[in-house]
Length: 220
Image (cartoon, rainbow, N blue to C red; front, side):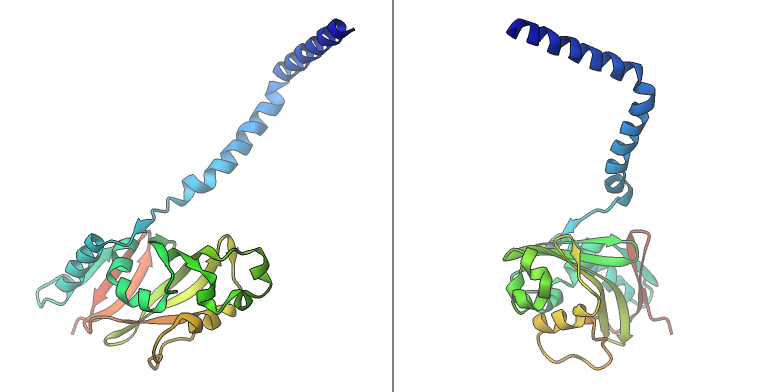
């Protein structure tokens, strides 16, 4: 019986293979489409994450410094990593103190900064409400935002989204969480959902588009 059982299983397997091969025109395109759908998002985004480095900060500092020259260019293009590295000292004073492995990228029209953070920096797990039940003590936190010039010498990183692991927090939570990690008095004119930034007085505008950041100097 054992032999017959093995022979029967082998015959069944052969029948399945034959049927699968004969009907491949029906199921193979579906399989290929599903594989393509899985691979497409990663390939389509084209996001390049850059670490915060001294060399990137130096490149940004040099490009921004040229804008201040009388005969210098009227704009400068920077990558997300270069600008985030340039602003690193200011951002680290306002981002959670436990932040590690800080990286930056330009995604759409936003400068996105992510880091591994202890959730206690946001006022404890209770600050996240019901979301805390699915979170660990340390999670990857991602800030997405735009850059604006408030007035001469003062800019802001306006936070449009905060993502903890793969969960995007509700927009009304953003000002509350920023208050938990912010240090010092908030300058007048800075939005509740933004982090203030000290910028050179000759910078007039900042725009994010097509994977790059463009800074413009004031032209009199």
